[in-house]
Length: 168
Image (cartoon, rainbow, N blue to C red; front, side, top):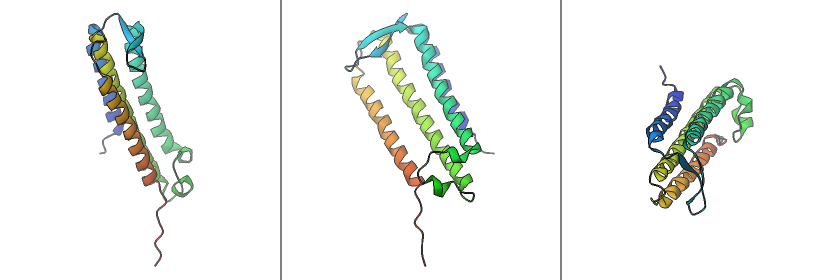
């Protein structure tokens, strides 16, 4: 029996809910919801809305990726992949759909992980009354995620390249 990859995606959503439940009672009534370019808070909002929106975003991302996962299996021609004319033919279609689903799951996991890390810093900043300096951590996480996207995109292009034909 194969392990459903949706469980891993749901695990990330579950982690964000646990994270919210842990920090919610500790947060002040008004929390920073926006930071300027120097990472100083410049907009504040109610903690209930902040935590609710955070969890809805995580659940929304999970549901979007799940929809794409199942939709690509039902309508392979709707997949936006490099060299689609070559890959979406009957003899390669099932393998192509599986590769695309795996790549989408990997992107989902990275995106959910990125949001968990960023919101961890936001929760900690709100608990410290904005006295902790997370400037370096924020940029490390952002550039790490951008690097992840570059590697993911490169790998996607590599997987869906047209193989060179071997002539004898």
